[in-house]
Length: 139
Image (cartoon, rainbow, N blue to C red; front, side, top):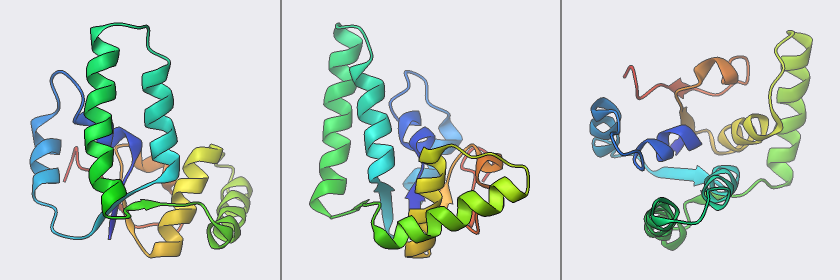
């Protein structure tokens, strides 16, 4: 299973997305999911935009993309098992002197629960989390 980080999903909504990332996404044959954390980040990002054509277009695009994930139950929740992994990740990273944001720790925890690989541009943010990583910008 591949879980797409927010920056990977967001790339598809850029006016000029990185062609190699789009090509990589088109080759995915494994089960692809996102986390509820990524969903929240996407929605918050769009809702912060000023009213206008760009916000309307992004809202429509995200709604369409999310429908596929919703219909296939591919939006993974932060549950009690993820909370256990979250505590482990936070502790390990803190002891290594590597702070991690709550959102990134939650995403990593969900990946660990599901034994999933995380696709992200920000691989350094997920070091020492026990999650397999792939960077579509350099894949």
